[in-house]
Amino acid sequence: MLAEIDPKISERFGSDTVALSGPTAAFGVRRENWKPFRLADGSECLVPGDFEPVIKLDGSLIVSRKGWDLAKMPAGGYYFDSLTKALGAFHPDLSTYEPRSFPDDHFEFLGHEAARSHAETDKALVIGFGPPYELFYGMGQGDFEEWMVTFASEPEYVDEIYGRMIDRWIENLEKLWQAVGDKLHVLQFCDDLGTQNAPFLSTEMFRDRVMPAYRRGIDWIHTHTPWKVLMHSDGAIFPLIPSLLEMGIDALNPHPDHRCGDGPRKNQRDLRWEGRSLGCLGRQPEQPHFRHPRNGGRGSAAPSRHPSPAGGWDGFRERSQRPGHRPAGKYRRPLRRGTEIPITPPARRRGPAEGWQVAASAVSFLFIL
Image (cartoon, rainbow, N blue to C red; front, side, top):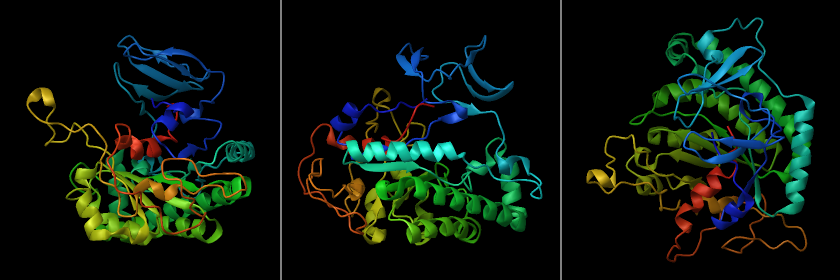
């Protein structure tokens, strides 16, 4: 479960983005009628009224819809694991399969929220809006091994699936553009391409199978809208970064930084990103070299303090240039919407909260569930 960030908290951490979220969260839960809820650690919070998990005897939580179990959170856990199979895990008959779409009222809601945010804030508006499924990792949810066998052995089948996914993505993007127009600044999509130590797939296979599909959707965005495209990808993906750049993304949020390659300094030195933004977040404790302070090591729980060569997330300080609007934030320099060169902040000592600025910007569009 992820928290929806309160505006006051967002301001405190210097975030320059605000989320554009749809009317529903995960598992079809509508964001309305909020009610009190107690987390496993005893913390009090609010959750949507439609969120009614069943508590099992072992303490686990089950989310169900219409008699089907959709997800499970183990006792004492933090996230729900999906119990359903994604497209690549059940190998559907493509003669009858159609990718999911959104109803018209979904885009009406987004249009209303974009107009409200545009009027009430000068922060960059960010939406998570990828294909119906993540083309690589998300397609294997429920049986990743089965999906990997299909991915490696049935290239024509995979190409047809990807073609339909991107066709539907572009249809949805067209509706999104009609609903929100240039009030939106950043479109984010996710696909986890790496394990803890190396990419899931070779660069050659990524360029042959995955990259052309994503590039078709990204090209549509850049051709028809002024939006910037941000990609998030977990894992050790450094060998894939040049291909991601060529694919057309404007910014990359890889995680964790020290498994992107040889660390963020190497990423910046070797790639330079041609004026685009590369931001890495902090280390994960489950990785082999991590040692917690109580076990005799220094540990590393804070986000990376190495800014990207282009200024990192400050590249998305694309403010509304309407009369009377003064850019907010620490660096009060307006950045014209559509520019290709982000702001580079002046060199100075960081305050106690500024080390988290990148993280606050990155997660400001996360939501409950």
